[in-house]
Length: 443
Image (cartoon, rainbow, N blue to C red):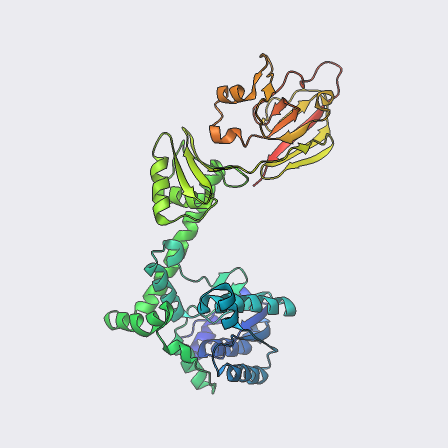
């Protein structure tokens, strides 16, 4: 089927398989690209079992925009596609939020398209971005210093956004429209080089094509390669963090006992850090990872701290976590850390899982789930009574983790340092009942 489509439309590569059997909302501006998309989908709907809707969003910026909306309405009548339309006050919204006109238009447009999508029960929003748009996007991102993520440009499928024309040149789409008797609307603002995309379209790409006539397809190939490599690096980074890292909850860290390739380390730093990092900050954090110990204030109330085994991201002024009464038959959640599930069990010690313990429920009357407080005391099995802080130091618990270690305690007596040990007072004794406590950390 794909070959026959290409034969009938020279220069237009189509693959609608992602949308087979789906309900689609076409973003229809009235320009050549979106008109071609609507016409091609209307022609293909029987072959691919498509249910089509079209939506036009009038930004209220240009005097002729009302004519665009009427043109789109007539086109949809011709193509037998149900039509939806909304007029927005983008200039007013931009002023209210002190936002750039382009940014406000994009934000409000996608918000409205998603409202329309929900209204008609569409599966995907079909967008008319094509190969020339992709080349412009890649150049814009490279101009900002992007890595492989930005160099990959737009994906054909990104969440609920579908771009089936990324393999097509704009000229081929316009030729298709002329050959089939379609007209389109011209947006006068596209001819003004007052923003980066327009400047690249009007000046940069034409100059590049004089030197490299096939630079647009070449940039599209480059974007595809960058996306493949970016996906690979993302997967490897995820696997590294799964093996040795925690990026959820109140304490985030990266394990450095077996440091990964720096390409993965830099991605892990960006993913683990709770605030957005600049390129210079990533460099500084990478350098910190090469030290034995050290700290770095990265702004946003976050400190990076290097220990012998890990790099931690901690709050400069941690938000106190309120104690939560421990249920001895159910689930107790400690926000930002995890949860303890309790249930009666056989009175036998659990020795092979630091996240599970069988304790004497008589010792847990009035117990809470919390983090440490000044003056906490702990009597580990086989040892005398001592300060909890000394116990954590002896157990070589890194300083940033000490404030994020969940505890089961009654008053200032700690009975389970989760992941480390239980108290003599809460240990099982002959003839006592038992309750199993199982801890699960937040993702």
